[in-house]
Image 1 (cartoon, rainbow, N blue to C red):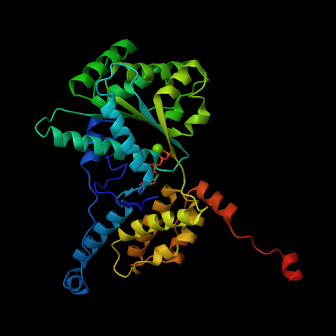
Image 2 (image 1 turned 180 degrees about the vertical axis):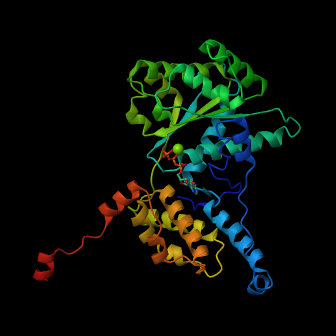
Length: 359
Ligand SMILES: Nc1ncnc2c1ncn2[C@@H]1O[C@H](COP(=O)(O)OP(=O)(O)OP(=O)(O)O)[C@@H](O)[C@H]1O
Ligand SMILES: [Mg+2]
């Protein structure tokens, strides 16, 4: 497994302002153009020459940076980008039966991040190829709403483009408007997140799934989906499911493992990459990699929990002015329920009173 590196085009999945979520063209553009630049660490002399207000502003900037650390290019992100960009190329002249990608795995394994990094990489490449064409919107990002109906799904696509309709509009008109707009702005990659919200067991869920397939047929674009454990959600069952299975490459998004020495190395490399992004005055490089076993135990190998732990500890280290991350500080960072459960399961067994007496 190759060593993860800080993303060359660093941006997080959620930088869009709340009034412009990622699922609108304005929010998406913000995500594509946003870069988290590491601030330069000032020397002791430079800091001493600053007023208290300037020092507080400098701390604020670093706190903000650490709360939103740049992305790490993980092997999953690499695989999603290489596979999907190849498919985009292969699909370009296909009239139908275009192939796509499904990113499937547990919550917090970085699916949304991988999907958005794919979209970003593709959009930046298209912009480079057509530097003067500012009307191009090569990527659409949409999420499947809970209990989605065909109309709700079509409206999600319409909302991305800012298309509005009278309340009694029928679904065909929405789909036609979406397809006309997508053709006009040269969409060639469609990202659909939260695919697990399609409930194929209900009639409206199955119809929404058909609606999505219809979009995939009509739009001359490559589709990349992400969702929680898609294989076990029935998406590949039945005739409809077999057709999907025949056209999609499934990329698993799994937590990091600690089964082999190579797994240990990969995890330590991930921790090391995140540590290299820290901009704390007294942090000794190598402290976090030395704690990589502890970090694995706390997070269950979930990149989402690891990112939360390190970003949280960095913010605390600036707040308490210690400017370094230690195990004690990491203990203060609250972590998600799933990681806490995994921590209990992997905790080294405490000796019971009877075993202590026997010893
Ligand atoms: N490659 C990465 N580098 C740094 N942080 C990451 C990376 N991938 C994910 N994260 C962080 O992990 C958290 C969870 O990631 P993300 O939302 O992509 O997971 P998910 O699999 O989509 O989860 P869910 O299924 O709950 O939607 C986010 O806060 C994100 O910033
Ligand atoms: Mg997600």
